[in-house]
Structures are given as C-alpha cells and as structure tokens.
Image (cartoon, rainbow, N blue to C red):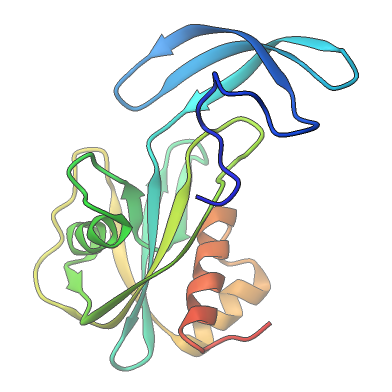
Length: 196
C-alpha cells in the first residue's frame, strides 16, 4: 500500500501531524468513528479531529466481449437519489484479495462474471477523514451467468452501456460519484481504451 500508514500509533511521516490521543466514539460493524487529538508541525492542537475507520472497498470496471461496460444504477441514501456507478462494495474478511472481492461483487450485483481479471490499483476515498482504501479491478470478457443476488440494503438495476455512451457520461458528468468515475477512468486506461 503506497504511502499508507493506517496504524494510528506509529510516528507520522516527516512533517506530518502527531496523534496525541484517540477516543473511540462509535463502534459499529460497518463503521468506527474516532476523535483524535493531533498536533500539526506548527504546534497547533486540533481536538477533535474525526477519523472514520471503514473496511477497504473494491470497484469493478467490467467490460463485455462486445466492448460494453457493465454499470449499476443504485439508490444512495446519502444522495437521496439513484446514482450511476460501477459495481463494487466492501471487501469482506473472507475475500482473499481485491480480485476475489470484485468477482464476488460483480456476480452479486449484476449476475455477470469475467473471463480475465487484473488489479489496476488502489486509492484513498477521502484521505482527510477515512483510513480505508478503494481497490480498482478490471474484469474483461464479461458475460451474464446468473441472476443478481442483492443484499437487503441494495436497490439497483444493471445497466450495460456502449463504450461511446460511457465516454459521454464521463465527459459530461453523468457519473457523479468521484470514486466511481475515477475508478472507471483508471480501469479504461488499464484496458487500453482511454489514454491520458
């Protein structure tokens, strides 16, 4: 994990903030919230500095044999709207790696499977407050193999979109989640479809 220091007790990187204390405020299976007291290099103490401890996530760039992209239009309670995204979710403790998690999420959410997989990379979802990582995986040769198996907290539909339309939504802001848009861009670059 490039540049990651999620152990709150280790000394910070040179020029980083020193953690003076940590108080657990909320402990839930999905989220742990901590209030830290930190000291900046200038000597300023910030208390509380809120840190969200979340499991790592995975997003899947799924490309069909016909060069279409498998997307989901999912209800997001924070936005109070349906949001166009790439499939993905929380990496479970049973997932051996991001590809296993991505394969599971793609199958559960869309009923699609991929013939080939590649781990594209990882990124910080919100490095100011969150300490988790989001992994981007690329699945190619995707095709429907089953019906989706949605979890109780999921309301979504599968959208298979032509590559020209995917380029348009990326350009025009049709994918409004920054994490999903960035993951899609990285995956399409890794597939050799886009260049920057």
